[in-house]
Image: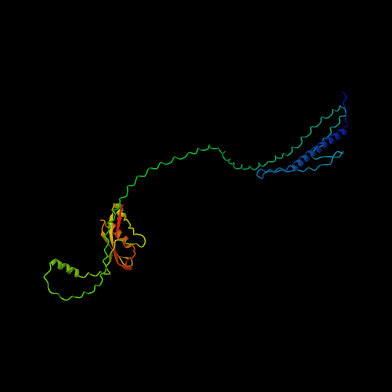
Length: 301
């Protein structure tokens, strides 16, 4: 095999060119990283923030002439060996690119948890109820009322004798005394008594004396006595007859118990009722006189 010999000058030029391309690639990679970090700005919570430091590296112009770079050390070419055959140098291992500063991935804030809306209570489904059969209520059987005892027949008031009005005595003309006749034989004694009675004048009637009447006329309703409660509880009953004296104006002048029921409470109730009554005046020939009458009151339970 034949080996190509490369002059030492050409080898140094190739090494410098490859180094320049390597530096250029590193610059491009750094710029791409910077651009990517500048476009994406992660939102980092202040609590979990991390401090980032960006190092700017100014790009160097690439010249065809060999230039010294601070980042890459110059490789000294080996001294040529005039006698021995030179072997092509082994390609130098490219230094690994500096590790890119890894930016932590943006921490996404969790979306606010929305409170679930309160469950809407659905109305229960309407269940059609079967139509209720209309049951007619049974008529209540009312107990038959007990037959009331027949009321006791009230005793009929005894008819009162009507007072006989005595006519006023008319003034008689004084008889003229006849001349004395001769004394005759004595007449029987019975005949003499009849003559004396016939000759006796009638007594005059007192106009202020109340007339006893059997019928009275009320002004308004007939008085009704109040049944005493204690008498009702004790079962007291009976008939009371009250005699009233009526003035010429129709007012009660006096009231007395003519016939008692046997119970003081009933007698007092009858007296109160009789005193509250009002009557039409009793008249004779258009002239009002005082009168008296008996009023019965029956207390029956």
